[in-house]
Amino acid sequence: MKIILNDLSYNRDIFTISDEYQIKHCINTFVEVLLLLQKNGIIKNKGDFESLEDIRTIDFGYTYNFQKWLNDKKNVKSEHQIFFKRFIDKYNIVIKPELISEFSCFILKKEYKSELLSKAIEQNSGVLSFNITKFFCCNYINGTYRFLDEKGNLKQENKKIINVYNKSNISHLNEICINTKYSNITSGIDLWEYREVLFPNLIICACVKEQIYDNPGMPHVNAIIKRLELLNNYYEKNDYFNINILGFKARDESETVKNNSNLNKLRKFKKPDNSYSYFYNHISFSGDFNGRIYFEANDTLKKIYIGYIGKHLPTAKY
Image (cartoon, rainbow, N blue to C red; front, side, top):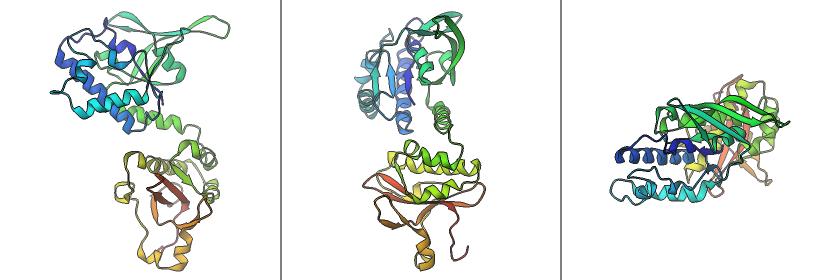
């Protein structure tokens, strides 16, 4: 999901903080949010974060700004300063807005027009705001969107834009991203067709297609999506696979199953390179039946193979 820096949130006519400590706190919060946006995989690629100008040049008009923050060796964490510099170079692009639409909102009874927020509406993007006033400390920014329709007539609509302003509402944005990402998935067939787009870090074996085509309904599909999302994101936060930190009660197969040839062969699946592996790691899910996802992690590729999605496979006790 693209995130746009809210240009109104550092507008010097709106910015009411005059205390150096408060400005420093505002910048620290902003950088911590950037860190979480990256950690949560909301920002992944160059251009995922857009701004009207280089963030490092933003001048709040008082005694403290980003340049002083970057040079502050005493009161700012050095790892945050290093991260911020890398973040700007890696993800941020400075853009010029196309003046074919505008977004305005009333703050303290005065109307302010943004040069950039109309683009957030057109791109269905979220925005990141400095938490300088109560108006920007909310999950949505409400305002008026004015645009030209196909016939060149001026139209206006009341719109709200997804907003992030501190660490606590990252989860709100994350939930929206997930819901938007999977909004077109209505069956196991859809899940298979969009697998490479939805889960780029997973290698889903061909045998899985038939298994999820037989999927009986959305409770089942939604449960599978949550587990695949977890597996897909694993190597974005970890260098080596450890099943104990995966969550969702993921576990290895028992020695009883591994040593039983009849049970063992049920867990042998063909991978895309035509090789075969025994898939012992698995994660449970519920829905219309008690299900399992069997997978194999590859630390070298930083990918996870999915060999089976379906009903609980037989064990010595089941």
